[in-house]
Length: 166
Image 1: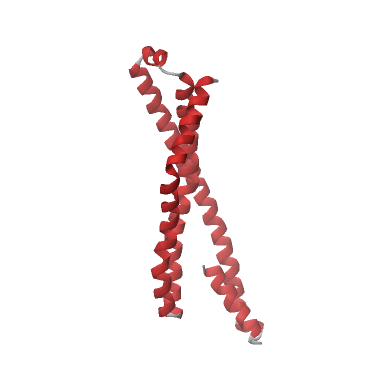
Image 2: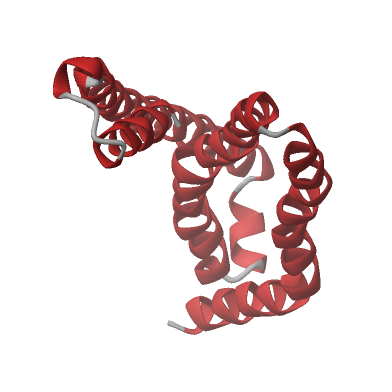
């Protein structure tokens, strides 16, 4: 947001015909903000990957220990393909959730708050209108997932059955 604000104000200064000495700091601010954003994105990726790896390791350990408790008779009574699909592919899917989805969810929640604060400083009525419609934009994907969850569950059951046949 800071990069866009600085760049926008610098462009406005260019169109207003102001000399470079009046707005060079805005250009520098946009560049610094872009570099800081890149560094923060890099740190977010690293933290997401580490968190996902830790969660996957802990979950696989719990699954393995639980299978040891259930004993070999459990594996003889159930299809191992289904177990492999859950233990390998299902756990791998968590990397996307913990490594990509949750960090992006945090950004998705925090960025609009910063934008609303900035908009309030420019135009309070516009900020109020945006504040009313912003929750609708955040709730929309949740409603979509809720509406399509049954087909996702069907897909996972079909995949586990297929893996059991292979």
